[in-house]
Image (cartoon, rainbow, N blue to C red; front, side, top):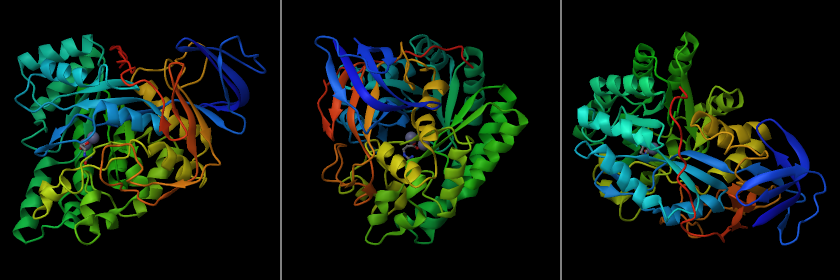
Length: 460
Ligand code: URP
Ligand code: ZN
Ligand code: ZN
């Protein structure tokens, strides 16, 4: 099995040049000018196209029991959508409930991905309680190649952890040398504000924002940073949405805290007014932290451009509008949180980032691929183009013009939050470990070929 990508403009986080890429079996074996096609090699003409390293989505939900329902995608549907959109690896959150055993949850989530996903995958291990049994399980899960934890400071009574559990989790993470990813919102403030709003008869999706204003997120970040500084643990703030939260993270970073920051494509392109759309349409845009005032978008773009924000993820959380979002018709606190964007993340980021000169090509690759590979222990196997790396490549057509459509998408959902939004660029050919998996918006790969990516501890 060999593959030759000819005449593409290779773009990594630090380099840009025209060359051919020869891949043998699953890895890149040679990069050079004018490589003659060896006998039997599959040849892809990449003239006029960029060749990017496979994009990595460090924050997705696929199997997700949440708010009384289950996310709609499976690894079959999600991985196909990911590949069509240029994402060749993703990291899913394992989210066990408080009464579930962590190791059983790990095996459950693993069982749902192995032999099903067409792209490579890894997990963040969710910590929703901490006792002696759970700690034994966490140590075993880390030994099995999951070198990151996930904690929710929000979702009190469900997935959220107490301060005692947070302290113990970060202490263990520090001991094992793993990074802890965290959803930062003050759960008690959310609960108090939700109760007050509902008592005032404010039940529509537009009030979701007011139950989680920026200060609630900023306090969550400050809270996490206090615990990170006290334990010396490395932390990664997921889905940071606003300037107030960014300020808190940066203040701690200046003091010496080991912190990385992720934002989402949703926060760059959608805003608070989307969740205010009439006739319950706003429910499509309910996520936590909520979509913010538009002024925050420039702050986040600046953060990505200047390297203050490390990664751009999707937080793919697929809940149908007609059946699942509707569960909150009478009460916004019952609307399943999340906006799906796994399939569209890369094209939207390219269009509204690179094409609008908000970020350059290297910043694009860095924040949508390389940084996630480095932070989560996948580099240089993933996240770059060099001999020895996995042959995960995206031959990208910057001349493509199209529009996002919920009916044409491959995510298993009845709507798109980006309906009708123009895109200027699309993956022409996507490869995973040397095999073509998607071509011009169609999945042409092998279901179930995706591999679990073991990630070693001891890095942090
Ligand atoms: O609203 C969101 N972000 N939903 C998915 C679950 C989470 O909090 O990441
Ligand atoms: Zn979250
Ligand atoms: Zn999430």
